[in-house]
Amino acid sequence: MLRCPFIMHFCQEKKMGKALWCCLVFACLLIPLAVADWNILKQQTHDGLKISLKNYCESWRMNVELHNIREFQVVPEECIEYIGKYVKSTQYKVDSQRATDECLVYLSTSCNLKKDGLDAWIFDVDDTLLSTVPYYKNNLYGGKKLNVTSLEEWMSKGNAPALDHSLKLYNELKSRGVQIILVTARKEHLRSVTIDNLVKVGYYGWTKIVFRDPADELISVQQYKTDVRRQIVNYGYRIWGILGDQYSSIEGTPSPKRAFKLPNPMYYVA
Image 1 (tube, rainbow, N blue to C red):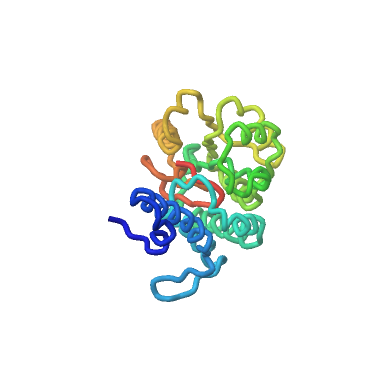
Image 2 (cartoon, rainbow, N blue to C red; image 1 turned 60 degrees about the vertical axis):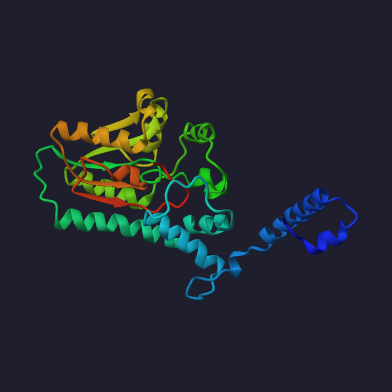
């Protein structure tokens, strides 16, 4: 039988069943207090290291990039401000530029381009060529669950800015005769406005751009992009590299010779 001395005394004139009920009610009142007392600033690691909010959020962001944290639907509430500052920071630009610089190093040292019109490089679009940070700025930088309708309404305005580091890589590849293929998870009905947006901010001269048609919406983004790569390889192209902000853009077979990932802690696409 459950015993609760304080409540038993309080309910001593009551029947045993009511005493038990009182204990349960009292316990329920204490639970929210215990939860409210939880604070990341009071937490410690197993080694006794005190965790600051910045430490916690930086660790969360890093483990997203390492693909240890997957399929999250929203940024942790306590990290919304931190993620917002990061994607607007010089560090985000430096991290992104380092990724594209490594693409250029690889291109210059390890790519034996045949220059026969079949050397190819694949780019994702959102947060690879075009930035959706302006949209997510109004949606708690990923702290609010994604509303696809709202996002597509924003995309349909065609005002997404270019990511400068990606534009530089894009133009360098184009100057070397590499065939540029864009594979986006955007739906087919956004084709016209997306092309206009890309051209407006400086992207043009690609070989092919692939959008997700209704039939492809029944499969995962990773499967869709894998299927597209298989078609590209079947056409005879050699995929020297892929640049994307999601693992779903770069994983799966057939795989490129190298894959490069840009930072993106705002959302996860499987």
